[in-house]
Amino acid sequence: MSTSDFGEELKKLGFTLFTGVPCSFLKSLINYAINECEYVAAANEGDAVAIAAGAYVGGRKPVVLMQNSGLTNAVSPLTSLNYPFRIPTLGFVSLRGEPGIPDEPQHQLMGPITTKMLDLMQVEWQYLSDDLEEARRQLAEADRHIANHRTFFFVVKRGTLGPQDLGPQSSFVRVNQLKKKSSGKNQMPARREALSVINALKDRHTVQLATTGVTGRELYEVEDSSNNFYMVGSMGCVSSFGLGLSLAQTGKDVIVIDGDGSLLMRMGSLATNGYYNPSNMLHILLDNNAHDSTGGQSTVSHNVDFIEIAASCGYTKALHVHNLDELAAAMTEWKKTKGLTFLYMKISKSSSADLGRPRIKPYEVKERLQRFLNIPTTGK
Image (cartoon, rainbow, N blue to C red; front, side, top):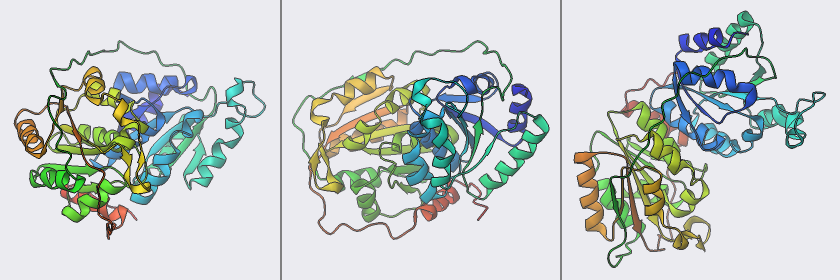
């Protein structure tokens, strides 16, 4: 099937933002996306799903592309982000290791279980036809699933898509403009105190994204608001979700509130964020050197220089803030000057013993945020 003709059918349905990780079976569609659409190269497949989820909430119709070995990397956000929040994704996954067809040894197991994994995750799927007319019908069906908040994947066999040359690619070098490392004593406030400062500075143009675990639960107790998004599960995905939302909603300030355990889990996202460099995204890391919601087990964050990493990944600014006043001042300055910014703050390990959970369902959080963004929430 002609990849360019198939790509045009995707564009007619509004699918113009692509993200993923390359696979030789999908290289033609990836080349088309790079040539003709907006393509975000993710560090891994789970990040790609989260980027697409954020873009969808922000009003775009994204596509995720991955090899089937990478489907295993995407299980966490597909099951604990897309499913509970009812955020649909149109995905294309290659079928490496198809039974009866010689392939590399690492695909020997993944080939036979690819569609079984999709079934287990309750993801609707079809083998993509190599006939354009049939593929057009399949796309229409997939689009109906997306409209009803259901994820849909095409499983792509070898040779389904015709050749597509890759055109000239633009490569930008993102250079950190301001780096401020630790220069004094850390106040070590409680997380709730830091969240109160962050929340107090929001306005009608601000979206606040809180990572999974205690952070989202405490932000909910500080103030539940229609412009808040409380992650559940999908640990490590909050800044990738923020990237997708920032790219889709350039007129909004997107505040990503992360934790050390979360960021360590998917630290490659910093490189992707730095390269695509949304000027309307502020990434705040509250580091208590612990997995607080699971009993306070230590992370390895004390051995990591997050400021240096964020700066080397191309964040425009990477700043260590030592106390609540510096946090407020840095946020106020960011609202004036913008630019992708990383704020790092050490906090204490304290949290409320009787901390509750949001009394609003995840999909209601998503729909409420979309209404705040003036995004239609049709479907079932």
